[in-house]
Picture 1 (cartoon, rainbow, N blue to C red):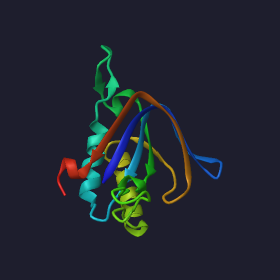
Picture 2 (cartoon, one colour):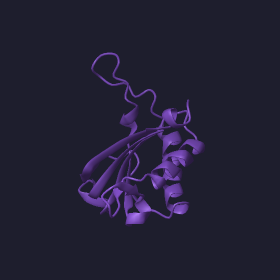
Picture 3 (tube, helix red, strand yellow):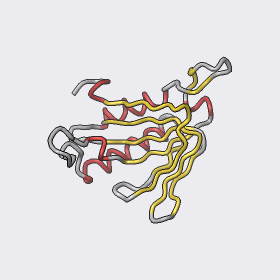
Picture 4 (cartoon, rainbow, N blue to C red):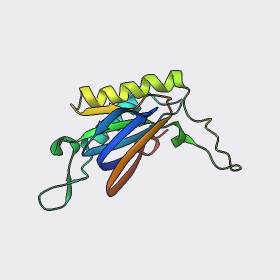
Length: 152
């Protein structure tokens, strides 16, 4: 799994002009899933994200986690995180998991953040054409990849 974590001061996602998710301070997560990903991968990333200390404390140091600042998450499924651009100019998405595999794991990941870490998680709609609007605060953008965290 790959997750792009972007600290934001506000974010929303729209589908066909209708707002389906909105948060204020928190994280926008772009979540990519490949066919070898498991619930263990989702658990590891959920824990890392819940405990990620990238919000400023009273001394101005990035030392606080999302729950400590009352933040929320806007989670967006993003199969293009597994784009392979090594050959030619048209990306291949062969490593991205098929929807029947990816959608349940994406839901599990979001439910883990809600249930085990008591975080408010808004989402778009898996597989939909979404318009995401947000203000990247900092800017703080971090790429988390389970291949880096636990190996292949």
